[in-house]
Image (cartoon, rainbow, N blue to C red; front, side, top):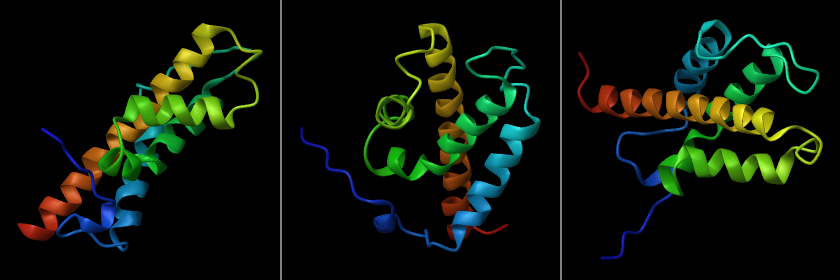
Length: 121
């Protein structure tokens, strides 16, 4: 069975005005959540991980239309992070995990937005 993906614009009930309603709560969650650990590493501190979570928030739309959050974040990390070759694997894994969490939160907010627009309370 072949499953085809659409880009985010083909999802019923979604429009670009929803972007701030998705990214705002997602980024706030990244800032205040205990899911982003407080580490003290020369390679990536808490601010660095909050930034990775925020990156994940911004990439939720790729997870809607292309592939799972883990894959989106892992590919993004390999393509855009200049320190991948210098950072220990544990730090790279933590960055990918934190990005994936942000992406997952973004997806959750996206689905709330779509369902909310179809079935307002």
